[in-house]
Length: 115
Image (cartoon, rainbow, N blue to C red; front, side, top):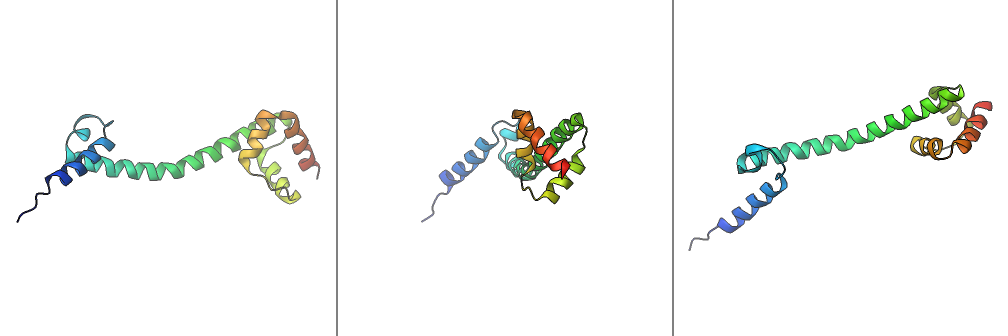
């Protein structure tokens, strides 16, 4: 006896179409093109999760450099002195400190640059 595979196939195709429902034109209506769109979108998502980390690190460094330059220092010497002094704190936390508590940040910078 032959078993129809229609419902399973339809479910699979509906799932793919639902995942690409925001795409423009044939990309969200045709199953064949929708599948290609889904593969590409997952590839972009994987790539951009890595890029997001780079972008944020770059943002924190720019914030720190701008704040440090207004104090008369630069980023590279600050980070070098920070490492030499043995203070372990990441760039995100230093950036947040510079924005939310400028006075505390100034104390940190002065203690690091004097050493």
